[in-house]
Length: 320
Image (cartoon, rainbow, N blue to C red; front, side, top):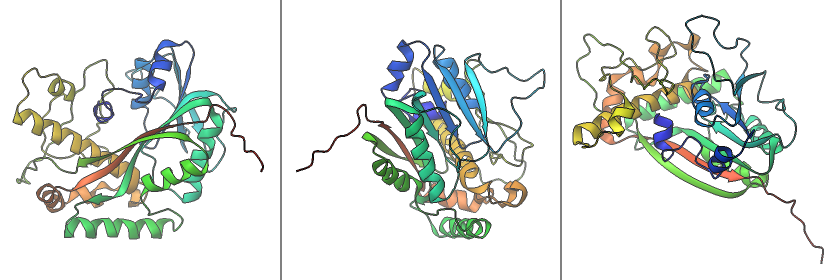
């Protein structure tokens, strides 16, 4: 729901939205760096005529076999892939649209391969949609800047090949290098923190309960990979957005939810891969002083929301 709100109220925000909505048996590729299928399930439900292929990287387990687990839509397919350094397991021109969501920190070679492979598996005229979160933030204070610097040092020690450059800039350069056309982009600044409760006594984790037709924002209060352990109101983002008489309190509630989810995105993209055993106690956002500084200084995440198109015809050059 937060992703949809940030992408102008649609799941697919490129012109592919209309193509997939109105045509039968279109194919959608989802490369999601967050490590779960929630968004691809939502995509399958939104476009029931299309076939959605969700690429899982480096995982060997499929959908949960627990009888209580929610079954994926019949038009959803989970494809396991060893590494994004390798070619994608699809033929040329197989997809009408490819979606690159929140790619994890990786090397420039991997970024190059992702863009190259997306172009290969897209049909002529197909669209590539991107939601890319940068490592650096805007309006960082002293504490936040130090915390990000330590994260970069930890990342470099973990793997010196991982690029510490802004992923949004790197991907855009690669789009031009690989011949994509018609780039449309929007750089969104998402608040890092809403209203932070000062009391550090009894902290409970409450997550927004999205309506039954919408995949819920990831929640697992016992998981080490979930940094959402803050005092937040348990309220649906959908309800807040549909409030017929929005107020300042309504706006602040939306801000808190969006900020909390965005912090989870950031942790999944940049912290979990390098934290020892995924220990969230070492996360930047476990420090309330950092969160208060971000709130006071208006610190924001840099999120690139963009789409581009594979050329419909091969370019021809005339010799003079």
